[in-house]
Amino acid sequence: MLISTNLPGPGTAPPCPPTTMLAAAVDVEWSKNYQIKNGNVPFCYSVVWLAVPAGGSAAAMNIAQFWYRSAYVEDASQTASLVASAGEILASLLAHAGLIAGHQLCSDLAVLAANAAVPPGGIVTTREAWHQSAPSSAWTSPSPNCAAPR
Image (cartoon, rainbow, N blue to C red):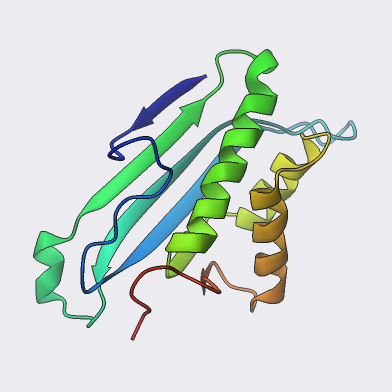
């Protein structure tokens, strides 16, 4: 599996600079085959983290930091590794991001879960949090370990 990241160290979340909130966006790409059951197979995911000033000052955005992580399978034998890695990242999103956004995230989570014999905890927990939130494309994480949005 190919991984590209600028995250410092081995972790799955960036450090949270003082007086900021971490916002994160996640996207999963998958081959689509709606004619057969479980024909949708993920082949990559990406996460972008942005340290947003907790006070909401637009002027402070000039010094905002961002981080990313992308993972791509080289062949179908790596799908399980991709799903496991996505599970770790999603658990990290829930633990550290004050705001989480995604494009078609509900579908992305369903495809990841369908491609695991037992879906990783991060995928299960993120799906539960998503279904409990109001239907939108972004939501506030239930327990960020960083500055809360104000």
